[in-house]
Length: 172
Image (cartoon, rainbow, N blue to C red; front, side, top):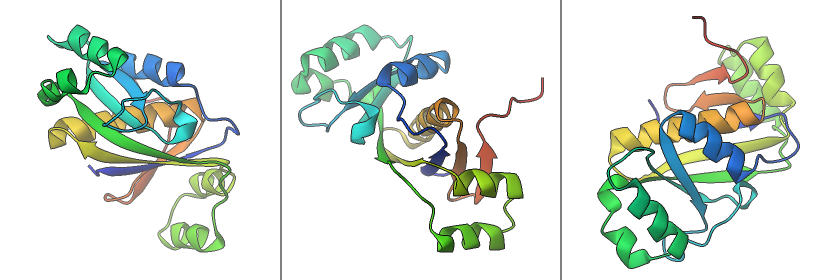
């Protein structure tokens, strides 16, 4: 699994932080969208935030949420072992270049997925920033997948070189 994921979305509007929080919670994560790890100023997804995550039912979950709400950098520095973070760079409006589309076509991307990328209105690049690597990658997948679902998008694992449709349900 990659530490860089790209979502190509169809929706013209960037989802709200509340929508992302709800889907992340279903995956077992609490999240906060902040400008940076110095101010912890809350921002919306459209502002390309740093997304901080911690286990929804973790032993220090309440302390983490309180420290983030207070923007208490000192308290958060003592909780870093429980935190993971990704950078979510949102580009809107977005239009795939002819070169990008040609590269996907040459790589053998399915026509339906290529069409979705070609018609995408926004792109979000989700990159692991900090935390235990395995946990951070898992969190990155939770954030990117939620973003993909909320934008009726497709998700690309850059390292693995494959693309999946976030609107398709898994078979039971």
